Amino acid sequence: MCFVGVRYSWLAAVCLLFLAAPVDAADLGLVRIRTHLTNGDIVYFTGAHIGNDLILSCGHCCQAASGPGARSEVLILSADTWMPYRRTTASVLCLNHEADVGLLRFDKPQTLKTAYKLAPRGHKVQAGDGVFAYTWRPQNRSEHLFSLRQVVTDVNRYLGPANIETTGLPRGGDSGGPLIHDKTRWIIGVTSAADHHNRRGLYCGLSPIYDLLDHCSSGTAATPPRQASSP
Image (tube, rainbow, N blue to C red; front, side):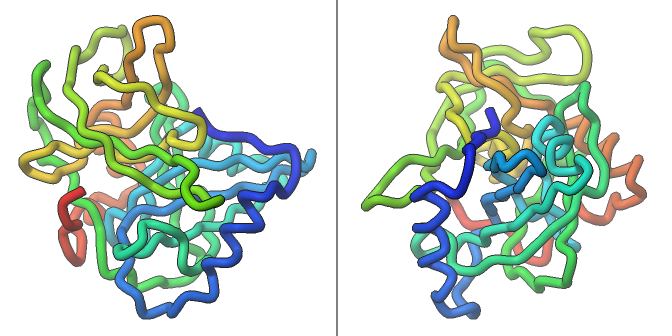
């Protein structure tokens, strides 16, 4: 569910307009990542700051962003407008393609004020749990981030790494966004794909996220400087 554009679109041009906003505005803790590929395509996806300048996202988009010659820009969103207000760069740190989870790190320290906290290891997600996911939609000739209240419909429906299914249908560019438990505000998953036939969203589960953090020797990244506000 990465969004791929052939070249700079009107969307990319509009996003640049918001980069002139004051850099001291409170950040949302969620980001839009724009990766330029060597063939001229542009891949758009989403990520969540989880502390220590780490961005949690999806594996398939991180794989594209780690390709030879790929360049990734990170559009940091304002907590007030939920739209980009400044731009920086990041590089892929590590990824698990099978589980579809990845980590990026800002190339320079960003001192972001907001980060999202992972649910504790071993946290059990159950069908019927209320959750929030995030999606991009046009508004006033630009792309705006929205939160969507959804419900977990199944857990580990598919063989392999832990996975979560929910109501709702992710759109292009939503990949990598966090799945947030509606009561704890913890991250319990990462947006992976859309099941268009059954109109369900598919998410990487919690345990592969921790496995990746352990693999990258960055377990402290799950402790944020400040818990993100309600969606």
